[in-house]
Amino acid sequence: MNAQAPSAGLGVLLRSARRRAGLTQQQLAGLSTVSVRAIRDLEQGRVQHPRKDTIRLLADTMRLSDTRRATLQLAVGNASVGSTLGDLYGVELAPPPAPLRPLTGRGAELRALTSLLGAEHERLLTVVGLPGVGKSRLAQEAALCCHAQARTPVLWVPMDRTAEQPSGAPQRPQSALVGWVRSLLAQGGNGGTMDELAALVRDRPTLLVLDGYDAAQGGLGPGLLGLLHSCERLKVLITSRRPERTLDGRVLPLTPLPLPGPGPGGPGRAGATATAEQAGPAVELMLSYVSHLRPDLLPTESVVATLARICQALDGLPQALEAAGSWLLLYSPEQLLEIVRSTPLALIDGAAPPLPGDGPRLSGLLADTVRELSPRLAALLRAVAPLTRSWTVETAARVLGIPPAAAAREVHALVLHGLLRQLPATAGGPARFSVLNLVRPLGLGQPSAPCAPSARAAVAGQAPVLAGALA
Image (tube, rainbow, N blue to C red):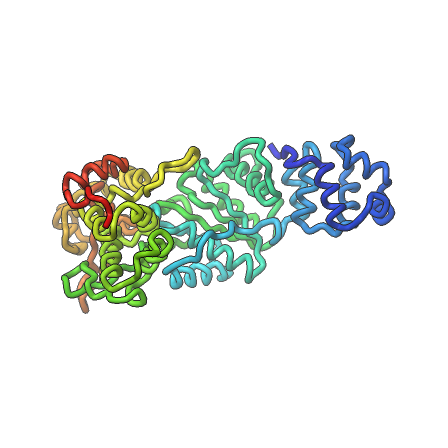
């Protein structure tokens, strides 16, 4: 289980490291006390199983970093990832994944999460929310802060099986370490596997991020709690589509990005949005996509107002906004607005066809979220989905014919699942809610998003003006 296939030939790696250090074989031999013949045999691939002390002496002499040292050690045949990286485990070997773009519109959420991660008594945190809301990206930014500011090793473990690396593919020490940890977690703590992980972490401060915890096959909860008890300086950050009842700890619901306020056109029309600066986080994110895809679309008052209404129709869900933005190569903002108003699920998977190995698409994940609800929560969603105006807990209680206290628990659960948006209440009035636009058709039992060609045909039939070429 712990054996790691060589990621590259030991001889090639050793020769590259020696040349990078500016040493000849004779110089390396003289400084390391390893014979010239032994070094020559290693570089020519004649020896695949050198003594551990030999590799250590050569690495020390060449002053290799932890990462390069681990790469060299992993290239030794039948090297054990756990024992090889255990002594070198630290900040350099355990970084979070690098982001592809800046985090937009999540300043308050990031401050709250990093504050909790910095608190000594908070050791188990779960970021929960709808698919596509940005849970992984927020966790990534928080992990980057811990790694850079507190010098904390971060074990970032994707729990979705689509994240697995193909067998035999070259691996860096970081990916080898994460793959090893992931294999231990996949066994759910059976057979002493959590003891192996506890031996790696020991008393060192570590942040373990389980991204997509809901994709894990059961049995992980008890082992995870046992790991926390064994490693007193370990913190665990989970991202999940649903709160786990089997785990304690702090739950942080992540809602879609704030939407522009109502304008002169009425509630939800966003007619007051005049400039990009006034638009808010959702429109700011949408504008970032537009600026790359359609640089000809200047952020005029009309364009910003139209994009604000698109954001309203797509609930400010970041992944849905990105997918909708990809269609701007085909449609104008006005045409895109017509589509998302009539069939909001139609374009949220993006214009590009899926690639082999891609995970589930957003439309399917949203449908799964609704499909996995308990019968009671599903009944509540069906009852309130037809309501186009905001409603209260008392409204839900009347519709379902249950006591307000019971309705409050069900509404609270739907909020944690991310299916409802809580709206500003009037002064002294009760909290008000509405079903997300992307969720409403699913709650009503309508099918999820059609494929792109079907969507275009449907739109062309509903609005003939959209069938023409872009102006």
